[in-house]
Image (cartoon, rainbow, N blue to C red; front, top):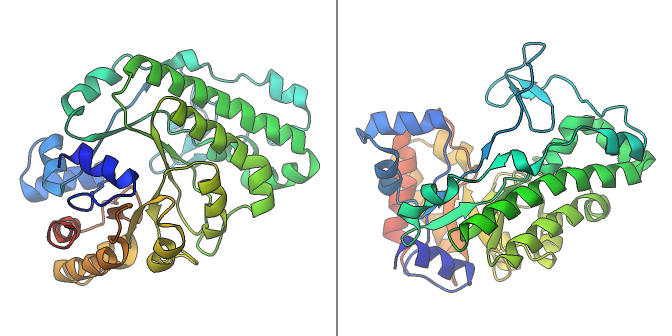
Length: 349
């Protein structure tokens, strides 16, 4: 099978020739991996890891905001951030919003600022060989937190629920229309609409089931329906413990869950496979911290990955990857190689 055939067979919940492999990485780890292996190109590095996926991106081309208060980046929604990577917000522009009029007056970004003109060129070399991920990342949950403040968002859900519903609707509108542009321009190039919203902490969801259904699920359903309208599978990255939310995600039509963290409450691989493996593709479950970073040796990682595969492989519907999409720089390269080499040995059907 080609990588594309392998992945699409997995999304159909049938057994492919072997378990697909996914390698999401921080730029720092990626450069470290190339130095460690002596591999010069990104494509050759992806092939060494056995990655069955390739990802294409639109480019934000909206107006630049003047950075203030030591900010290093500004989101499309006007939230300035500072720190490592994208950092943390320096302020919350809608923290004191109490009316629908204030939501309507906010300077929301235009989907016209999403440049999709290079996507087809990015994906063309991989179209027939690999499963291609695309569409806007659509982190509407995180954007709402940035705009209002995390704790304050919960108070707003109680005090001004209509304002919160309008907030999520406006944010999601931007991602819906930007992704629609991508799908319209690229036809069948993209196989999987890949979105991301971290809804879990170490011990449970960051929002209760009732409020998840009222405030968050409607936006997720809009994104899922959009992907299906254009013939794409839809997979969501979600960190942490969120087992209580999975039945609603399945009912909403989500096709795949990415970066399952086995060291969080309720996310044990065997239980997820038993209870949800027939209904949704499970992606992840090799512990990034306790196995990949802190593991004693490549041999240990190899053996632990084999255990995960023994649990998750039967019947298909599983993609092997680290429990966090962003493999961090401190992760030993030899450990990541051992994880993916174990799939080559133990992941065949």
